[in-house]
Amino acid sequence: MTVVKQTIVGILGGGQLGRMSAMAAARLGIQTHIYCPEANCPASLVTPHFTCAEYTDKAALETFAKAVDVITYEFENIPVETVEYLKLFKPVYPDEELLKASQDRTKEKDFLNGIGIPTAPWAEIKSAADIDKTFDQWGFKEGILKTARFGYDGKGQIKISEGDDTATAWEKLKTDKAVLEGIIDFDYEVSIIIARDIKGHCAVYPLSKNDHKNHILWKTTAPISSATIEREAAYMAHELAEAVNLVGVLAIEFFVTKDGKLLANEIAPRTHNSGHWTIDACSVSQFENHIRCVAGLPVGKVGCHSSAEMINLLGEDILKLDEYHAMEGANIHLYGKTDAKPGRKMGHVTIVKK
Ligand code: ATP
Ligand code: MG
Image (tube, rainbow, N blue to C red; front, side, top):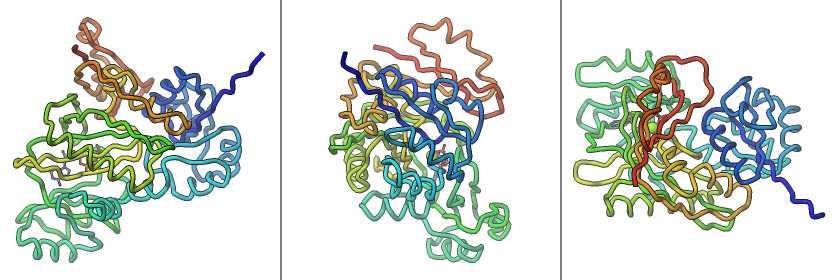
């Protein structure tokens, strides 16, 4: 009898991205081991192996690392020290340089600009005086002040306009480091997802268009037909993936300006909400490709076979599924969360069309 080795991928973080990665892994005969400080997190409900411990618990990290073949993460606020410690035992993908860049908006923008990817005008802010100085240099007073670290879904952001008191805005943000960004009067927002395997082969997903409500992603439409923008976004995604020697998946969010230019807003060193549609409209989803790449398998050809509209189910939207239950082409994905707080991502629906 030949014994087939079962690879075990360790995943730091137990949210919906970890859950959908674990489900994609299971289909490939790969097991996942979720490491998350919260019991009953969405990913823990679909995986055979779960460690519930803090990211600073060295004994638990060591036991976890020894129980898996390779380690990845599903959100970017994992302490870098945790990754450095785990690397003593097993490979961790994507590399921590990418993690560091995506944890801090100043490093992120510096890094992007350094490899030729344009962003909105920005400045590092450490005091109210820095805000005034930056507006003086720009010659106008309008911008968004964002905490350098730990912002998500528009949290940790304050818009400042002519007439607003900068000292009050700075105090309100309760941080010691921020970025001030010029406000982009964009036409629309897009994102691109790239997967890169250990040998450096890449797969790029079709560009998707993203609509936000209250700064939270609400709807993604894909593919969108804009060949020039798609080519440019794919080029930048390749540049970034090469620059960080990516193994796994990353996403770049862009603003598309009224004159058709792309400005990068954010990078995510992981699978992304704007790529959930790939589960139902592509042969190989972003989650499967992430698992394939970190597990040392070849990246899969995307094989986009349908167009898709993905709608996030936020908060109590999860209680209103009748329409989707009755709709042809609607694929419902729920994350197993029981607490339907306003704005919380509880699930999503992808409506596919040939
Ligand atoms: P998420 O985690 O959902 O990506 P976030 O908290 O990291 O959100 P951003 O992506 O920086 O925040 O901003 C959220 C949204 O706010 C953007 O998608 C965009 O709609 C709007 N926004 C952010 N920065 C700017 C800007 N400089 N000009 C215009 N709109 C902006
Ligand atoms: Mg964003």
